[in-house]
Every structure is written in C-alpha cells, then in structure tokens.
Image (cartoon, rainbow over all chains, first blue to last red; front, side):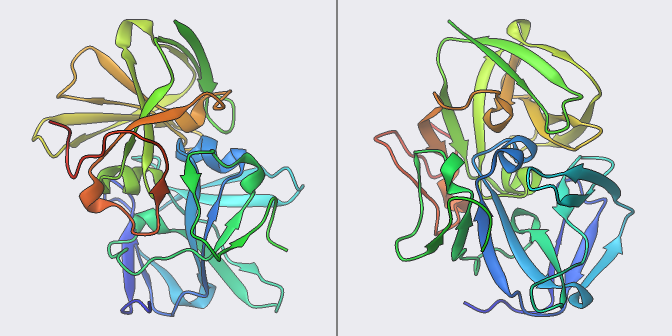
Length: 142
Length: 135
C-alpha cells in the first residue's frame, strides 16, 4: 500500500519532528541483538527512504556512533529528551543513491506499513511469526 | 525466582532484577511504538525493590492513557529503552525485555492494546489478547 506524502513523524516526546516527501523504497524488520537491545523489544522496524526526501523540521538530535558486528560504523539520531531513536543518516545504497533508514514506529500514520524483508532472523524470538512469502535472511541484507 | 541481568546497547547502563518468571506482556500501544520506534514493546513487571540499576539513566515523564504520569527510563548515551513506571502501577518497575542479556526464556503471557497493532504482526502462542488494557 502506498502512503500519502509527505510522511510525518517524530520522537515519543515531540522534541524531534520530521517530514519525508518521497515514497519509501523498502520496509523491513531487523532481529539482530543490537536492535533488540536499543529498542528493548523483539525487533526493529524501519523504512528506507531517499535521503534527499528526509527533512528534520523540529529539534536537534543527538548523533551516536557505534561499530556494528560487521565492522560498519552506524550513526543513529536520537532525541536528547526522550532517547527515542528516529533514524540513521544518509548512506549510499548499492546503486550509489544516498538513502536513510527511518524508525517506522515513529511515523504518525503507520496504517500502510507492511515489511517485506526480515534480517538477522537467526536471533529472532521464536514467538514472532513472519508473514508467509516474505524475504527472510538469517543475517544482513544480501 | 529468576535473576535477570541486563543493560543498554552501549553497555553504560547495567541492571539486575528478580522475577518469578519471564512471561512478558506484548504492548502494541501507540506510545510503546513511538518509544521503541518499532511495532510493539516487550515488557516484564518486577517489584521496584528488586530492581538495581547503575549508569547514566535519563528519565522522560509523560502522561499515559490513564491520565497518570508514565516515567520512561533510557540510557542517556545510546538511547536504549530500559524501563518504565506507569502511575497505574505504583511500586513496580516494567523492564524492556530486549535489554536482557539472555532473552531465550522470554515468552508472551498476554498482548494488550491490540487496537493499535500493526496488521502484519503475528505473536504466536496461546495467551490472552486484549483490544485495550486488560480487564
């Protein structure tokens, strides 16, 4: 289902607000142990959008750097007041286009969200059942 | 009694807690979606007296659906969701189970606020499911 644009969202407390003016490229879940720790739950849920379509409209996020198990440096943008992780920063995808991963739970309208890819399912909680027919990867995206 | 050890993603916040079991509540409410940035929260309630935490915990105080305050505790360094204290449950600390060092024994005991659930989410198990808060 295609969402209405622009998409809007923000952190839990409202300090950070953002707008996305372009259609999301992909929606996915990630079941890696880093995502479980930071979200405090079973998996993270994200949309990938063109970085040029993303605009922070309110607030100044904290930027936190962490080296993932893969050796890649991940930069996360967090709300300084409520700790909410809203997105990463722009990073080139395999086609060389700058894309950004935005935490889908922070969107205002999430009725259209339907992930189709699922990563790091080797550490998935056994009681989470993924939709049949989706692309499921034991580790990172190919 | 199970001893729970846990902490945030960057390791700055660490805690221990005691719980009868690892039967968690899966909460699909809008606030839990926002705070986790994900589809639902995975929560375990323990007595506050059994919860010992060290490190740079920061607290955000909001208002829950009940009209009472909800304190949400997170790591000020990496933002990991650690625990919450709703005004409806005095004396209790509700842990975000994804921060447990060992999550292998965690099983859902109930799902709440399914009115806000993402349609794609399937939590398997033979547990009670509630449209809003239980009861």
